Image (cartoon, rainbow, N blue to C red; front, side):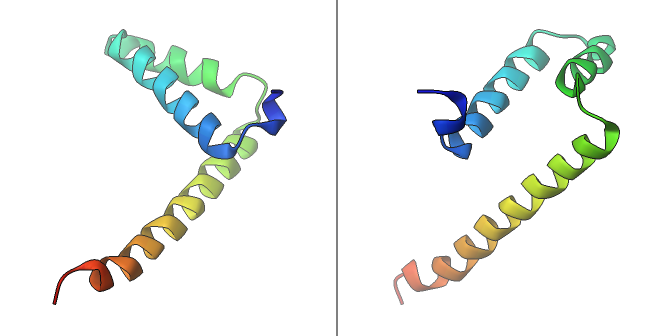
Amino acid sequence: MSGTERPIGYWLKHLHNLIDQRFDATAAERVGETRRLLMRGLTPEEYAETVRILAVMAGHLEAASEVRAPSSRPG
């Protein structure tokens, strides 16, 4: 399966796991190095837009969870 055939959730989880591994294994002085590795090939604007888009997507899921939560509670 090529990268573009995988769902976004796969890539988000994969990236999350890689970042966690990197930060678990690093000291504070390596945070900048990790950020540079993550941003390699991206402009600051592309990085900011990516973060903005991920925040919007997370907001949609959070809002959907809040809408569903009250109806799933026993009354």
